[in-house]
Amino acid sequence: MLRCILPAALLLCALELRAGDPPGADAPAVTVPTFANANCPIMGKKASLKLFVDTPKGRIYMCCVKCAKEIRKDPDRAHAAAYPKIEKATNTVCPVTGEAIPEKDVPTVVLQGYEIPLCCKDCVEDARTNSQITLVKATNPKVRDVGNMVCPVTGKAIVPNALALIGDDLVRLSSPECVEAVKKDPAAVLRKAKEMAAGEGGTRTDPPAGGK
Image 1 (spheres, rainbow, N blue to C red):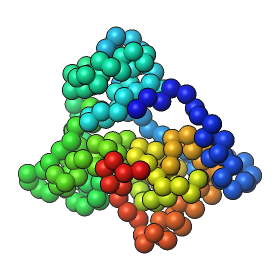
Image 2 (cartoon, rainbow, N blue to C red):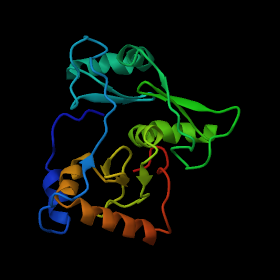
Image 3 (cartoon, rainbow, N blue to C red):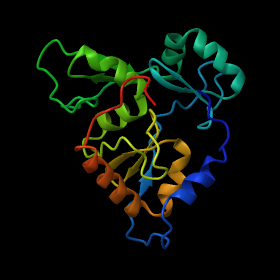
């Protein structure tokens, strides 16, 4: 999937979030980690954060739209060029289920230069589908997954890889464009996400692979 422009959904997200005063200096920071490759694996030029292809090995950023075809043709080769060094993640719990990583016969998944341990082989597909969430949770032990299945901004179902970190709390969204609305009042969004998660029966892990 290519993300080249910001659609009009930004306005919708902003309108559907309850209006409030601008966040003060003590408001929690809102971030979206990218784990991006520096250079395009096809042309070798500087990669753009707005241009990427989602592959079984995570997102591969490129310099121009024309490179997407070559990346899709051979994602393994493109990943090797984009992320030549593979770093072993040291997470002790599965980023998909939250269960402990087994002591032996540990299944792993490679995403954007990280080899990430999982609790079981059944988690591989979900880890790939939600690659950005998997990476955030596997590389930062401080992250707390709120586990909301409904977007606190739009009230719509969440989609894979749409997220915002509010401080150390991971909130799932219905669109990446909702991040701008989150920044307007992160405390209110976080509070609403937690309320939604509690109403859904408690926090949950990643949505089913391919589900939206």
